[in-house]
Length: 542
Ligand SMILES: CC(=O)SCCNC(=O)CCNC(=O)[C@H](O)C(C)(C)COP(=O)(O)OP(=O)(O)OC[C@H]1O[C@@H](n2cnc3c(N)ncnc32)[C@H](O)[C@@H]1OP(=O)(O)O
Ligand SMILES: CC(=O)C(=O)O
Image (cartoon, rainbow, N blue to C red; front, side):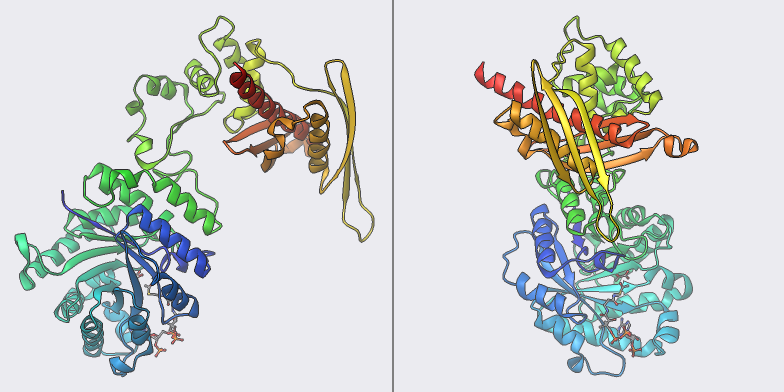
C-alpha cells in the first residue's frame, strides 16, 4: 500500500478564511484533535505574522504529538536582505517546529509586477531561504505559490523555481493552485511532468525522486478536491488541505473528503480505518470551535450525507444499503438517516418506527394509516423530516400506544412593553393529569420562554422527580411563515429542537397563531421526553 501524507493547514490557511478565527487555546485543541485523527503534519501558523502564532508554537512545543509533525509557515527571505537578517526566517527557526514550509514565488507576474523584483533575484531568495532553514536541521517544504498559473505563462521559469528549491535541499515541493482556477486534467498532466523531472534530476528509489511532490489547492472553481486527487494520481504523495475546506475566498481542499477518498476508495495508506471513524467528530469539533454552522450537505461527514427521503430509496436501502449509498457511513463515523415526509412510502415509516422503538409487528401498527396521516399533515404545513419527536407521537396515536402524560386545560400569555423598558412576558397554564389539575405562572425572556417555564413547573407538580425534565434543553427554535400571501394571519410552522444527555429530537407545531404553534411543539417535546423516561423506568422495574 503506497503512502500519501496528510498535511493539515486548518490553523494557517484555514484561518485566512472569512470569519474563521481561533484563539491560541482553540488552536491547541484543534491540533490535538488533528493529531488524534492521525494527520502527518499540522501547519500551526506563521510565527513571523503575529504574536498569537508565536504563542501557539510555544505551547505546542510542549505537547507530545503522537502522529503529527508540527510545521511552521513563512515566506522566503525578503528581497535585498541577507537570510540571517530576515526576522520572518529567524522566527520560523526560533519557534522550534521540526518542519518548515517556505512559500516562494514561481509566477513571473508576481515577481516582476507585484514584488518589483527580477526573476534571478527571486531564485536566489528561494535558494538562500531553503538552504538556510535546511542547514538548521528542519524538514523543509517549498510551497510553490501560483505554480499552475505560472506554468501557463512561463513554464520554464516555474520549473526553474522548484528545481532551485530542490537543489537547495527542500524535502518536498508543494505545487499550489493559489488562485483556485486550475482544472483537473491540467493539474494531472503538470504534476506528472514535475514528478518525472524531479526523478530525472534527483533520482530516488524505485524510479522516483528523493524530493517529494505535494499538492495544495483552493476551491474557487469548486475543484479543489478533484484537483488534489488528480495530482495524487499523477504522483504527488503529500496533500495539503483543511478540515471542512475552511480557507480564504471559497476555501481550501476539504480534507474531510480527500481523506476518505484516499483511504477508503483509492486504498492509499494515509489514515488508519480506526482513525477514519473519527472524521465526522473532528469535522464537528472544528466547526464548533470556529463557530461555524456545520454544513448538512458536506460530503462524507454532513448530517445529510447519508440521509434518505424518497420512498423508493428507503425501500431499496432496507434490502441493501449499497443501492443508494456510495459507501458505508460508519467508515467515517457518520450514520444513515431516514426522513419522514410526503415523499415517504411504507418503508420510510417502518424503518423510522423501528428506529424510534415502536413495535411494527403488531396488528395495531397500521403503516398505511400512518402514511396517509403524514401526507395530510404535510399538506397542512407540517414537516416531519425535522420533527422525529412529533412523528413518534403521531404513530403512537394511530397505533393506540399513546398515553397523554398531561392535558392542557388553558393557557394565557401576555407581553408587556413600556416605553424605554425591555419587553416582559408572563404565562399562566392550567394543566390536568387525570382528575388532578394545577395552575402555574412564570415569567420569561419572551412568550415561548415563559410558556416553557410555566409548563415545566406544572409538570413538576405531577411528576415530582420531574422525570429528567431538568436535563432537557431547548436548543433551537425556528419559525417559518407558510403562506406569505395571508400576511399576519398566515399559518406559521414552529420547529423546536430539544436535547438531553442522550439525544436531540425535533417537534413541530402549525397554527395561524405563533404562540399556539409554539405550544404544540413544546408540548410534544415534553411528552416525548416524559414518555421516554417513563419507559426507561418501567424497563428497569421489569
Ligand atoms: C498564498 C498564501 O496563502 S501566502 C500566505 C498569505 N498569508 C498572509 O499574508 C498572512 C500573514 N501575513 C502577515 O502577517 C503580513 O503580511 C506579513 C507580516 C507577512 C508581512 O507584513 P508587511 O511586512 O507589513 O508586508 P505586507 O503584508 O504589506 O506586504 C508583503 C511584503 O512581502 C513581500 N513578499 C510577498 N511574498 C513574498 C515571498 N514569497 N518572499 C519574500 N517576500 C515576499 C512583498 O513583496 C511585500 O514586500 P514590500 O513590503 O517590500 O512591498
Ligand atoms: C501556500 C498557499 O497557501 C497557496 O499558495 O495557496
